[in-house]
Image (cartoon, rainbow, N blue to C red; front, side, top):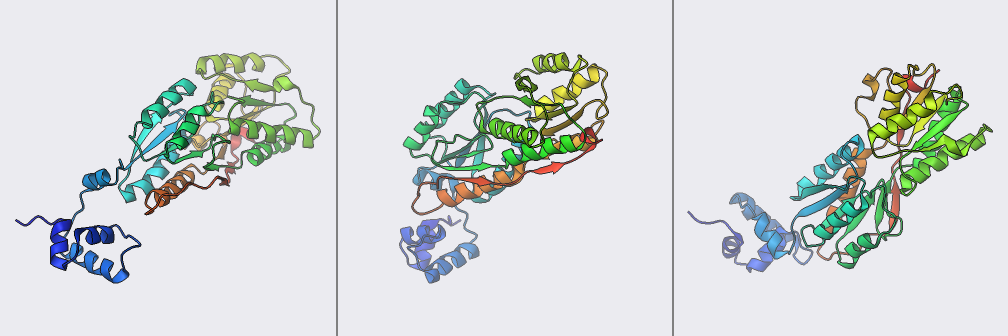
Length: 338
């Protein structure tokens, strides 16, 4: 049985194998007429390219490294789904790593990936990431890197974010309009951009409404759920407790839910709650949880489209240094209503 490969196609077409190869790869060096001839014969003979051999010739792994800070957050799972939907169309697969909100683990992952195991990196930095020396090394080695959600602002590449400031402002105003006068803000990290922007929106909304404010209403929380549960319960017991809570991340809202239930308070009668979250079962909770949902799947798709466009060019160029904002959507449910 004749083996259908590039050499065989070249003999049939009376062309050089290199011409056939470039035509199959849609090279700009090959005319449209030649490409059509090659593609027609390839289809007729049911030619199947060898992706492994192609990646070796191109010195590519056909692999994208994805680094996320945690798996428990539904947002990151949805981003990965969006990335995968696009990359699979180009024959790329993903290697997904979890930094567990640990910058040292993040550095180890980057070091591993710099060994030539991936063609590009998509990542959201850990809550501990302040120095970016390990990320600068990625650019120095010529590996494309793009950021989403939690970004490294000083790395010259494209970053995909949501309108965190405006969402923080709007969510706080919603609580105020629902009758809240003492609103606490649950914060995971002051290092990461999303925390800073959401906090800034919260503070500006409080200021714009001329409500009283004390700095200890911004609650610095922990990575551990048990610690957060005790911390939140500690400010719920006193009579001067808050009447509203804005949580900057999903996991803190879940801890708040448990803490409020354990202190026998009622949502929303005693305390109203809204959170940044992509939790799919938010409307099934008791009461249904108000959320600011990020366009996670769309962010993943846009990250992947940008990378695939870059990696599949005949001559790879640097990714443009810019920030792209895709707005979030507020879903008002019973947990934050009067």
